[in-house]
Each structure stands twice: as structure tokens, then as C-alpha cells.
Length: 322
Image (cartoon, rainbow, N blue to C red; front, side):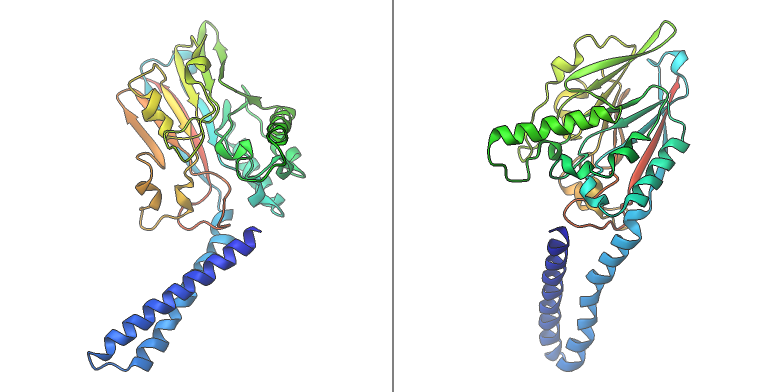
């Protein structure tokens, strides 16, 4: 189905380019240019979307980049100085169907970073839990000293497929939750977990999907998730970065929020992404005072099985005491 959508979109885009070339050729006639020469030369531009798609599918989406950032905080206990967090997001395992070797390579890069903690910020699947078939063992191989922590994203609730009933939809979600836990991951559903070093404590808080955009449903409860989170340094896993401004920054004591969701629209040209038209925070590190947000651009893809200028991302965040 994805391939049909991709090819249909490319065909429509090529047709749009042909119409633009036709208009340009007609206008050029009024300036003495040859309609035939301008039109037929301009038709070469119809190849551009196809070449870009081939490059994005065969090359760019397989280039897993490790991005490193350091966050300095005066609230971080000294026993957590140098703490290494690998942040990943938006696998959309449908996009890894038939690409098991690519996923193994990504997992190998993650493990090679020797993280203290791995944080996954949602959208493990695109449509349903069956996307884990054949890939579950690969993901189970991800290891970190303090474990893998995960939250759910908007796609994980099976919102984008037809179900015979609401009960079937709920059962699909429960199957996904079970399979995530079978991989040895800690799934945080509006709850938190403490990581202890001596007398010091770090709190990892995880919420179900919360969005400041009405196009996406909210399932999470931030206030419930924070109950008992008494670590000196607090990390929030929240899929949608719009949640940061809605409830977190300036309104809570969360030090670091990790999000995904945007994919940077899987395209970036000269540093600009169309995601910037939809989200204030859509890629990379943001901060206000001592509160930070990192938005990961994801490992997988949705809709268009390609990336162009927005490579799949594995983020290594090192926490440092001020």
C-alpha cells in the first residue's frame, strides 16, 4: 500500500511540474522564445522528484546518524555527571519491513555508544503490533546499563486503521503493550521510575500521547505521571513536542524533555524543513532557562518511504553537572 501511495504521489507531482513547464513555455512565447524548445527542455524537471525519491529511499533513509549533545545542569547530582542517554524515536516498523539488516545496523550503533539509559519516545509501529513480527528479537538486543524506557506515540494506538469494533482497537493496543514489555523495555504509561546512584536519584517520567495540536488525540495525564517523581533531576518522555509548551516549560520542575513525532517532515533543504511551519520546536535542542527539550527526527518513515536531508537519527545526550 505504501508503494502505491508513493508512486501515485510522484506521478501527480510530475504532472504538476509538466503543467508548470507548459505555462512557462506559453509565457516565453510572448518574449520571442521557441515554445517547443522551452517546453521539451523543461520536461526534464519531471525526473527530479523520481531521482530524489530513489536517493531518499535507497541511500538517505539508511544513513543512521549519531548526533551528540551535552546538557549542563546545576540540578544534576554529581553522581550522574557524564550520564549517557541514547534517545531514539519513531521507528514506524512498517518502514523496516524487508530491511532487517538496516535495523540491526541501527541497533548496533546504539549499543556501541554504551548508554546508561535508552529512551524511546513513541511510534514504534504505524498501523498495528504485527509490524513487530520478525523484528522483535532485533529490538530486544538493545542494551543499556539502566534499561530501555519507552512511551507510546499517536500511531501506537492504531488510530490509522479500520477496526471492526472499539474492543478490537483496544485489544490491538494491549497486544502492542505486551510485546513491548516482552522485549525487556520499561513502558511508562503516565508513571515514573527512579534511577539511583548512592544517595542521589534521577526520575524518568513517561506520559501517554499528549498533543497541543487538535489533529492528534491526547491520552496522557502529565499530573498523574509526576506523582512520586522525587528525583533531583527529572527527565520526561513525551512523544509530541507541542506538549513541552503546553504543560512543561515554565509550568513544572522537569529538567529535560525528550520528544519525537515530527520526523522533520523527512525533508530538509539547506537547513530548512516544512516542519517549521507546523511546530515551534521540530528538530534538535531547545531550552528556556534551565529547562531543555530535545526533538529527535526518528529512525523510520511514514507515508513516503524516503528521507531527503533529514537522515534517521540516534541521539547521544551526555548530562553534565554545572
